[in-house]
Amino acid sequence: MTDKILVSLTSIAGTSSTLNQLKYWAKLAGFKPVTHNRQAHVSAQEAGTLREVVRLVGEGKAPSIAVQEICPRAAPPALVQDRQYDHRFDSLERAVLAMAAQIGKLVEENRSLRLALLTPPADPPRKVIPWHPEKTKDAVEGLTWYRRIWVEIFEPWKMRRCAF
Image (cartoon, rainbow, N blue to C red; front, side, top):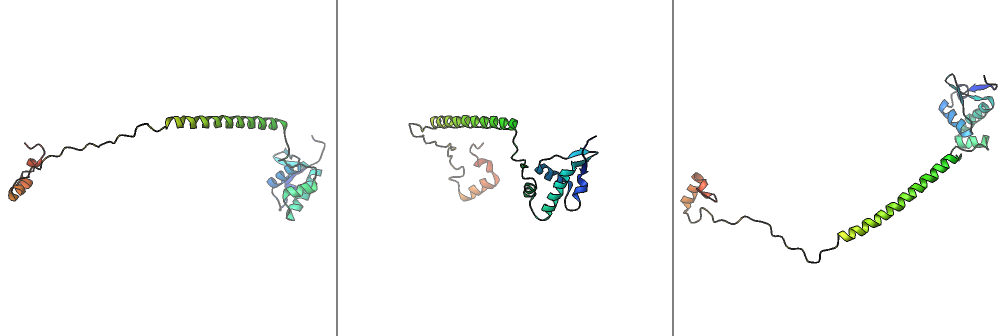
């Protein structure tokens, strides 16, 4: 058993705030609710602090400002630093800077290789003449008009390039 009196957050919440809000405000104030029988509890002194925060937020103040007014020594969670995380951030920062330097070198190398590949040729390009089929004489050329009609309508195979 614990030797201090615990107050559940549901008794503090009332109608003006939710349990999640109270947990967040407790985190801002720098204390952590204890979970017992699936309910979050805080000490009596912390409960008084949370009731004061609920009152100030109800008056229209921001929760972070209300917590700073009540507990001026409580540091906001964003300012709490951990040496382990500082070391990890420093190592990540060094890794990113090393990668940026390496990428800069690769970009310069890429530019120099591109210039070497894209040098213009010494002689002008040759003109390319596309292929066209050879022109053949018209099969009905030299025929009279009635003979031409006859060939076009009844003997079209004679108009082919290689007539049989």
